[in-house]
Amino acid sequence: MPSFASPDAENLFLASKNGLRTYAELALFSDFFLQFLIDFDHDLKKPVGFLASSSDELIFCIGACWQLGIPFICFNPKSTDEELQYQVNELQPGLIITDEDHNHHDFLGNQVGIAEVRLERALSIDVELGRRAKRYKPNFKPEDIFGYFFTSGTTGHPKIVPLKRRQMLFAAEASSHNFKPRVNHFWLLCLPLNHIGGISIILRSILYGSGIYRMDEFNINAVSTFLSENPMFQAASLVPTMLKRLLDIKGFQTHKNFQAILLGGGPIDSGLLREATEWGIPVVSSYGMTETCAQIAANPLLKPSGTYRPLKSVGNIFEPNQIEIRDDQNRDIGVNNSGIIWLKGPQVFDGYYKKQKPNLSFDEDGWFNTGDYGHLNANGHLFIESRRTDLIITGGENVSPFEVEAELEKIEPIREAAVFGVDDKEWGQKVVAVVVAKTHDLLETESIQKTLKKRITSYKVPKQIVQADTLPRTHSGKVIREELIKLLKERKRKDS
Figure 1 (cartoon, helix red, strand yellow):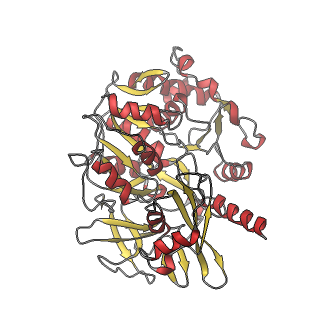
Figure 2 (tube, one colour):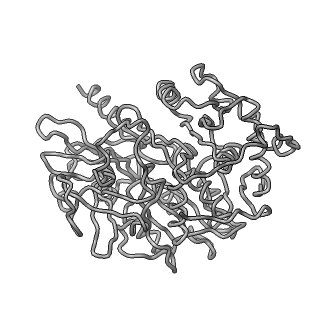
Figure 3 (cartoon, helix red, strand yellow):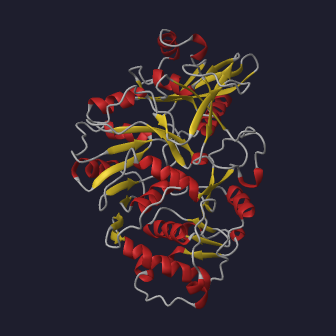
């Protein structure tokens, strides 16, 4: 089992617009937080819930839970009441800590405001641990659940993924062979704190003893300045949309000691990577999901500029995890053949909460069916063709929306595109695209389709193309395809 040394007390743990905090302060806060939970009569075996926007306090709370061995749940502040009520009823957290914007839900049960754990207050109190707190000794076991996370399901309730300490330890160990920030330097965190992507930055930094710089949200001007001018910044975790916005800044360059932009959160256009490489910006693309405790494959960090080949690959699977590409009959189909990605290893979760999806995701040998589509080359490089919920099947043919989007965005008048499937009596699904123009000019559908037919197979060409001013996106930059389907229906209703 991987192990990590405790961070030095004087090293930087967290920085933000509010100032600098050390690991000594995290240790003090952990004592405060333990006594705080006990004072509220919280059962320390039950998870603590957080329903709050990004803040220094939220990061300290998550760090304290990890250090104390107390499981936690980070609810999405943008969830609907129905979603929240379902998740609370399922997981039954003993206490939920909310901020002022999210403390009005009666169904949350036992809750307390995040103002009660303000850092200025928490770190100024000389905590007198009570008898119960003094007796509490974390007994860390690899199979202990450290947190519960929600998948970004497109229909029905998101599945609940319990993640174990074993998974985080193996993930941090594997990732460190490729990239590990130096102490007293920063890993930029501007991702949401209700997904494993953002939370893994916090926990990996604690294991490495390195620092985090937290931003409330992605601010293009601040990020550009940090990465190009401030030598304390060594890494940034971004989604493709964020990278694209950085590359839109004329002359943007990272400073000479900057190590990598870690890119994930969805399929990555090779044109975007090629542009970053040409500009000398080090980018490491990766593959992972909630069920694998974030990234389980990544390209190597090479110098100069992270120029790895082939660009479309997301790298090799981290050892000791294993991968197979299988056909619809679960047969391993070897290299250079497209199929479903199956994974096995210590980073892979053991099953959904209360077996929400029993017997469907694992085979009898413990291999996990990701539902994602891709292939391996002879060197073991993985290529993602379509994520599980996005594949379009039209007339019996599989279409990766991301391949079509990449081709659409090569057409000069188009700034960005989103492709998805809608039900169709003739084809089962038909391919539809929503596009945003670089200017306010109207785009000609037939001209776009004609151009695409020269580049991709005809069944992949969108049968309908709708122009919009913007694409609806989540806080992390992912396109909300359900909103696009609503847009399509509204257009159809207006035209009829």
